Structures are given as structure tokens and as C-alpha cells.
Image 1 (cartoon, helix red, strand yellow):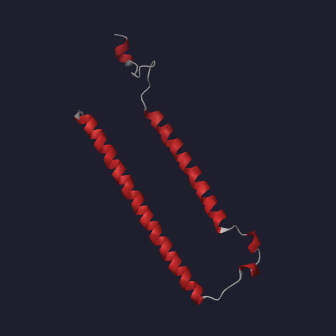
Image 2 (cartoon, rainbow, N blue to C red):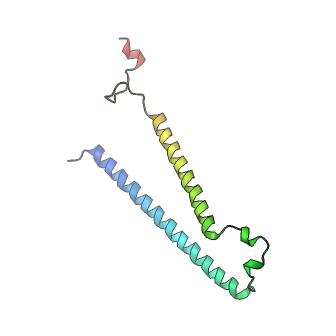
Length: 115
């Protein structure tokens, strides 16, 4: 049987998971909408603008391929996320009370230790 505190913690976790799922769903829907809009825009541009062969553009062979740009952007995003995680973990560590020994209890208050 769960105590009130355990129940509150479980409800908080469930709520947090639900919020995360809603955020991810909103992001996915937003991405779909943007991708659809870009696809429609590209289709319209292709019917309006004359076709320009890429090989005739100066330095076209030196431009990164779209796949390379996506891979590079994702690599940077992964590194930023890893740095953010490490930072958050350091913050958690910094806010934990100091412990003495291995039993996980905090050391006695300096004012009460001498009594």
C-alpha cells in the first residue's frame, strides 16, 4: 500500500511523463506542418522559376550536400544536449547536502555537534 507521499511522487512522475508526451507530440506535429509547407513551397517555386542547373553555378561542387548539413547539425545538437545533461547533473550534485560516511545521512549541525 502506498503512502500519501509515495502516491504524490507517483502522480508527479505520471504528470511529468504526460506533459513530456504532449510536448513531443506538439513538436512532431509542428515538424510535419513545416515539412508539408516547405514541400508545397518547393513545388510552387519549381513551376514558376526556370530550372537552373546546379553544375553551372560557380563553386557548386564545393557546397555541402543536404545530407551532410543535416548530419552536421544533428551532431552539434547531440553535443549540446550532452553538455546540457552534464551541466544539469553537476547542478544536482552541487545542490545535494554533503554526506558523511556511506549511510547517506548528513553530518550533524556544527552547533549541535559540540553538545
